[in-house]
Image (cartoon, rainbow, N blue to C red):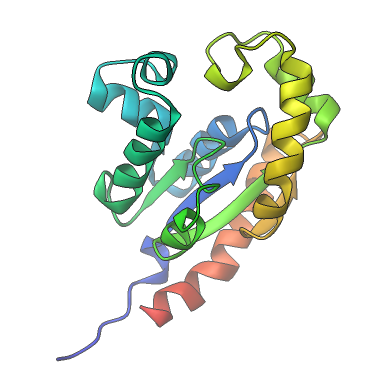
Length: 185
C-alpha cells in the first residue's frame, strides 16, 4: 500500500490557549489571510447541539462537554485547510493534546493573567467563570493549565501586540511546522 504525504499547504492549524488570549479573533484573521475555513470549536458544538456551551454545562455537565469536544476533534470538522480556534479546556483532558497534534499544527496563544482578567471580566457566557469569585477561578485554572499549554506548541504572546503582528507570527509558525507535519503523514 502506497503512503502519500499531505500537501503542506493543506495542513490544519489549531489555535489553543487559555480563555481570553484571542484564539477566535486571531484564528479568524489567520484563516482569512490564508484562504482557509475558520471554525471555533465551541460554536460548532453549540450549532451541532442546538444549545449554548453554558446550557450544555448546566444541563449535562462538564464531562459531557469534554466528550463533545473530543468528537469534534476526531471528525467533526474538515481535515485540511481549516483553522480551528479550540475552546480553552479542549487540550486539557488526558490524550486530547496528542489527538489535536495528530491532526495539524498547534499554536498556543498566551497572555498575562492581568490581560486575561481584563478580557474575561465582562463575559457571562463562560460557564467556568459562573462562580462567586471569577478572578480567583481564572487564577486557579490558569495555574493548572499553564504547563499543558506551554507544552502544546509554539507559544505566542498576545498582550499589547497589534492583531496584524500576532497573525503574521502565527502564519510564520504554521509555515515552518506544516511541512514536517505533512511529510510525516
